[in-house]
Image 1 (cartoon, rainbow, N blue to C red):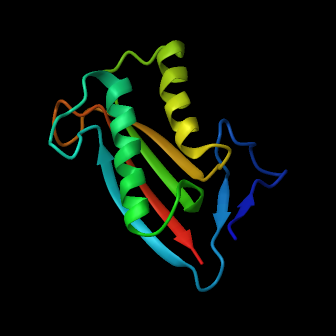
Image 2 (image 1 turned 90 degrees about the vertical axis):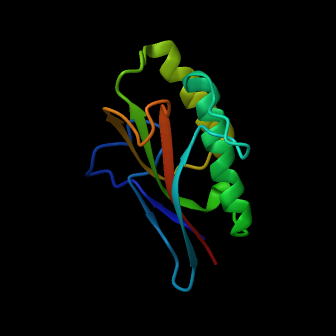
Length: 133
């Protein structure tokens, strides 16, 4: 079982994540490379919302391949392209996609804004570490 760490003497999480996640001894680890908004046929989604759906779906496929589920994620890193117009409404819509995928699970998380990803049409990339006993 994963254990969350949100100590009262540290800043409270600013969103739906935990400050730290402890992995039990003997757990299997799955390191997931960055997943982007391109489907299995090679089609890249139009806009951040479609790409976010695709990136989370790709992450789910890798988890299933490893015999794991979203609740097994211990660390997420999400990269957003800085040229996006991430107003409050757009940020809420992107966060809603994340919330549907994770449910009430709150892994340790980092979100970064970068100037671009490997391909100029990619707008989001998500990498993860998962653990299961």
